[in-house]
Length: 336
Ligand code: FO1
Image 1 (cartoon, rainbow, N blue to C red):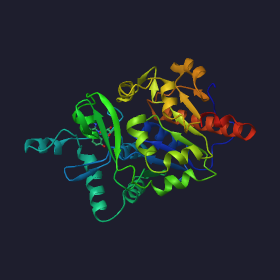
Image 2: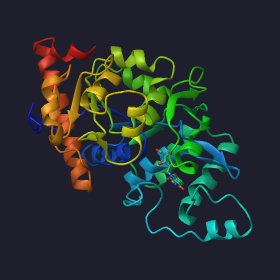
Image 3: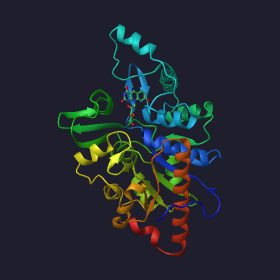
Image 4: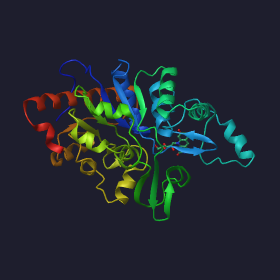
């Protein structure tokens, strides 16, 4: 399918997006820009990357999405805050503290306040909602669960806690598998399950986040995968790959190491039991003919808020066309 724009008006019902990391944060920002009604956009964010560090609870994906939506993110690094300074890290290093995980002076504020609020008895969802309100973010951002889930990367050098693999070891060890400790007993955030049971839900967008590191932890929560198979709204995956490469991060390396084809068909296979359609980059247009589901071919590289909003708008228009097709034929059910 070629580029699409809204045939009617923008959606009025809720849109659910699953996301994590830098690519997810960029599309979330675009969705947030075009769905301005408070609470219309529900962002369920990966928390498998969370960890305790220097006595603080760090939630990198929640923060990347929050900073992106609040316009406070560092565009170049993709994580952390813009106009950052590093005095605390420098002073910490001087006294022999752990400096391998870079916490900027401004960024530290969110880790300190979140840790304080969690200790005072708030859930991670409540803390996140409070930060959204304080920073003027209209979307409903939720952690995938309020319970602890920790991504463990199985490598040829043994099991590594996620940030040890990602930051300390710079994703160098060869990945042999991934597990999500605690996911089997964690309760999905109630708003996530409520959205998936909502017959008026407009679309589920799986953002161009790392499939194994950012999306699979969400799918590993009890009931989520099945709810995505059953949901009435179209489930659309925006591919994180362009020309067989990830825009940022180790998605392509990990897919290759796990022997998943590093292209649109590998992405389709990863989500085959639950997806209805894919959005792939114009560079990968030739892939569209060989995919098991309909594909929207459009530029997916997001260098600016305008790019993010354009991709968000085209993806939602695509969802709208799939819903219209589904009401006249069975074509939306091709992938599940
Ligand atoms: N990523 C790095 O590669 N090096 C860092 O020192 C680092 C610090 C950091 C601090 C706060 C934060 O919210 C994110 C940070 N990240 C850093 C990014 C983070 O580890 C990853 O982007 C995600 O966990 C993967 O989605």
